[in-house]
Length: 95
Image (tube, rainbow, N blue to C red; front, side, top):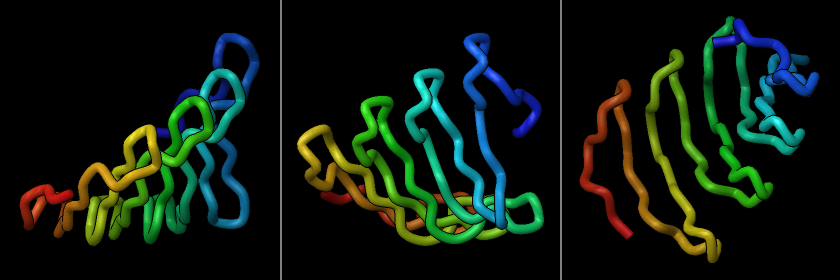
């Protein structure tokens, strides 16, 4: 997952510091950020559109989707919410 370190334009693909991992788009805006202890995605992660607008908030456990996931539309309204257990949806998408 962390093999590629730089985009062709020299922009870092990610930064890992103090147990937090931040992924970037080619233009330097944040793509995703969250806890990364023991080289695994854990806890609450936030995902952004290339414009910087919040797109999703989701939870991981042992590098798998686990818990609540909320996706927002481009007007910042909840598009849908799902719950996952061990990377599998356990309820239908709901608005």
